[in-house]
Image (tube, rainbow, N blue to C red; front, side):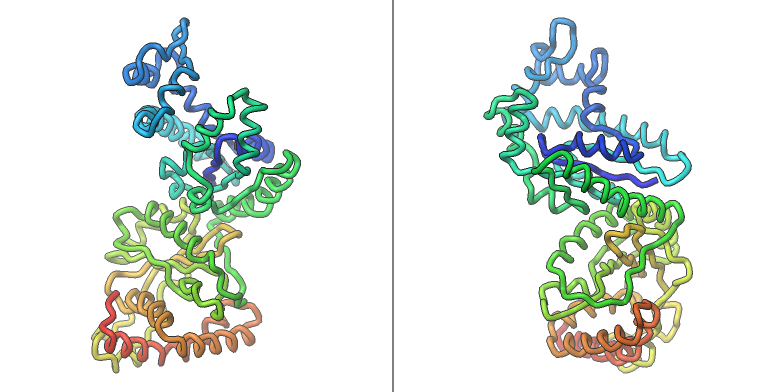
Length: 410
């Protein structure tokens, strides 16, 4: 089962996108519907709202008078916080009940969780994929006035009370603009569903990962933002079992536009033991990262290490063991290396990024090595990695000598 978090500002077109995904076969869990359900007459939610805001938020028949509640709850941040503190936990509980009921469904099930305040509630890292539908503010105001009968003042107040575009972009794996026509949105939604969401769901069911070809691309300034989303997702999935989660590898250097890398985000999850790493297989699969069973370690660099005074490990090859997972999402190839705290491979992954960042000559040298490896690999990842290995044997020694001379610490 693939869970998708769908959000967008009021008037952006979230309902239209949900409807389209539903027609494509998605199981929709609508946060607005659940929010209404948990405050029906006789519910715990409605009783709590009356206690907090007064019985004048009720209609004569005992149902919730939504405009009356809105007039009180949206007047300031404190009142809105009280409202969210009552409704959000109840909605989350009801959502969990629904998800549990469909989790065992056969096939490539896709559950789309339509959550208006996904950003504000900090729920984005809970989902393997977050889709944000966007529309320009003036378009949203016009829709709210014309389609929902709001006053312009009320519409703008509702928009201002929600997350802004920058906050939504920070969590968006997919950004769908709906400032134009409904037909345009439907077309874009079908493209995302067919070319990203469905393949993602199928890969998860089959425990398949996405491997990008060994092809170098110019540094992408958004790599850091993409990695930040992935790091947050992995921290949530791993919880206390991960002592740290870091963006590593060449894509951790997007500030150098003359540098090139494969368009693959590499992340290192640090744990206390390989037993803990094995315990993370299930949570990481649910987060969208199946394990690659055949890879159990890094190439040991003991020959080079023997000349490094600062880092005195034994030559035990077990100290280079690891677990590796990779993304099932065809839209964002990612490698997740799980390494043990203090082991040489874990330490070197952190050192390597800082060494490259601090030494332009080393970056240029490494780029030459990568370009030569690319030309001989014909797109094959294994051949590309093997071609770089001789350079790494000496680079390991030089990087630790630099660490010694600079006082570098992980």
